[in-house]
Structures are given as structure tokens and as C-alpha cells.
Amino acid sequence: MQNEALIKHLKKIGLSEKSSLIYATLIEMGGCFPSRLAEITHINRSTVYKILLDLSIKGLITEIEKGKKLFYQPENPDKLLRYTKMQAEIANDAHEKTQELMPDIEGIFAMNPNKPKIRYFQNAEGIASIYEDMVSGKDKYEMISFSHGQAFKNFLPAKDLYKFVKAKESLGITTKAIIPDTPENRKYNEEVFDGIEKKFWPNIKFISAEKFPFEVEVTMYGNNKTSFTKLNGNHLMGIIIEDEIIYKVMKMIFEISWNSNDVAN
Image (cartoon, rainbow, N blue to C red):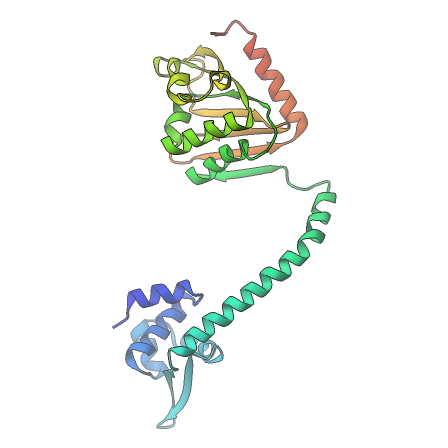
């Protein structure tokens, strides 16, 4: 009896799962006693009464008396359209008021010495946003990275990978990277930066794959950001630390590694 598609759409317009179930049942039956609703929906009776009251306040159903018992029936479906329109107006009003408050909120946030400087990301979409952040500025800079190379290439879809390296070229971002010495990574520049001006191909040094077995990347970018990304397994994760001192320390560690005997062209 319960229309699953209708329930799904009712949830999308803001009704709770139980409210959607009860409203859909009333639509299909044309009306119902609370006890019968509880029986059909398997929702306890006290909850049914609360939901019926809420739907009545929203103007979606009407309460009448039948045989000295309360009977509930749906209002004309036009009322549902009116309800959703009203919700949209409320949301738009809230959005406009938030926009008016933004200068004050941003001012307070900027003055707060303890404002967050660490951002955490999970899943593939979250990790992809880290790479988007690397090319979101307007100034050119030198990107420095401990990169797995092949793992990064396999992580981003080909279209997004090309978009990323093309953005680096457009912004004038150059790159120095230390990556594992594997046959695949020896072809990294030719495969990933094909079609990009060679002056924007990464300057790469290789380290023994045994010493760099992890499918992770540590990247220093912009002027004060360091990202850590884990690119394989069931728990993809990433972090951006926005701090000048940490950026400089990680850059120093990279330069020490770059000039060590453990890496080579």
C-alpha cells in the first residue's frame, strides 16, 4: 500500500521518514484513524499522534471527528506545493540574512588567534579537493613534494589529472619531487605532463622504492600550506596544515633529502 517513490520524494522536500510514511499512507487511503495508521506503518501510536499534529500545523492534513473518534485526511495536494514554496522562502530569507552577517562573522573569525589551521578530508572526493586547493590561488610558486607518483596518477581520473597539470601550467607553478624509483615512475613526466610545456614538468629525483613503499604524498605548496594524503586502501584521508613554520620545516626536510646520497636523477 505504501508508495516508496512518494515517500522518497517527500523526504527530499523536508519531511522526516516517519512523517513521509504517514502522509503517503493518508494520501493512498484517503484518510485514516490513528490506530489504523499505527498498525499499517508499524509506528507506535504516541509517535503517530505527534506526527499527525505536526502535519496538521503544516496544513497538509485535516482533523475531523467520526463516530466520536478523531479521523485524519489529507488536504488537497495544492497545500503540499504551498508548503514547499513557503519552506523555500524561509530558506532564501535565512540565506539573505546570513549574507548580511558575513562581514561581521568574517571579521570576528579573522581576529581570533585560535582559528582552525588544520583541515581534515576523507574519501576520494575530499582528497580531490586538496589537489584543487593547490591550484586555487592566483600566484605562481614552486610546489615541493614527496610523491608516490604512480599512486597519484592512478588516483585522479585522467580528465581531472590533465585539468590539474594544465592549471599548474596556467598559473606558472613549477615542481620539485622525490618519488620511488620504479619503471612506471621513470615514465611519469612523459605520461602525466604530455602536452604541457617542458619547463613546467616536475624536476624529479628518485629514491629506492624499498625506502619509499607508501602510497602517500606530502606536498608543500602556496607559501604556507603542507598537505598529507593517503591514496590507497579503504580509508582514504588527507590533511592540510596552514602554518608558515610547519611549511618551512617540511621544506627544509625536503631540501636535506633532495641533496642526500639516497636520491638521484
